[in-house]
Image (cartoon, rainbow, N blue to C red; front, side):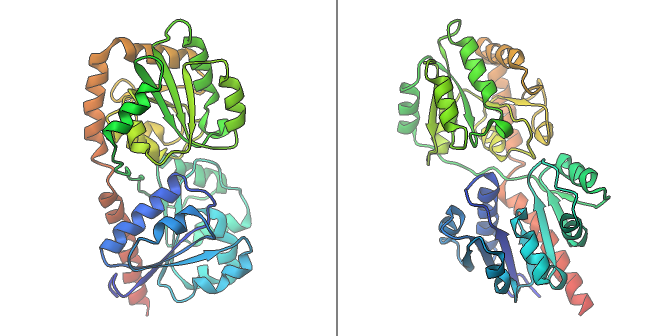
Length: 356
């Protein structure tokens, strides 16, 4: 059975459009170019379903919150690819996970709950994919298993930028050195209170350094209040032109409290940005301290300040890391990520043929 005859069904029931949904989209788009017949089960009126309409040979099924409504949609496919855990119960109850081979991608570092459902779904998967080795270890520790997993990192998006946009973004900011951050505004995950505290500490002593937070999320209003008296930090909300923002930044700050990999870091690498990030989860698998950025412990605001000032005063170091990161980003292409998934899919199809 070739990829042109097989039907590959992706399941991603996330409500928003974050890193995991962007990666699902990039993978489906590349597979479509290779001739795969695909189906996507996605959240009704969600951005993933909307954006994916442009992908050829992809049938999109939009579903609501009631798992019983999903049952019929998983039939008549050759491989299921679960991109997050919301569909576990539906698929388990429907019996499709027993009848249809499936691939499971785990993108987050949070511990999966040690319950019968997770244990059953993980242990029966034909292949488990994690974005980093750190995620795979957490899965096995949490479930008390010794499952094998394939590490396939995310891919850089390949954002483009507009030079006029970049000029306009920088002209609105105070100072001449921009510390940027892109992520869902949720301190319990992305640790942005550390960025606000850093901006507060450097506000008077280094007014030429400005901070930009791009993204939306549950802490937006709180952050607005906390930054109201600071003129060196901007909250710009959700934007469409992420590439122009990345191009406008001088360095990238990513102080997450837990992180499977942090796919936006790959886009920061692609734009040659020196990076300051926390030494947690899968981040050290991308960032090596003193080589292409600096790693700090969570809540080590003193160290964040020191590293920002280190970059500000040592442009030769920045230039060196810029070159390193542009080179490093070449390992994280959509093509190489897709090739690794295709190997897994084809292995499963081959096994299936032999069994029948």
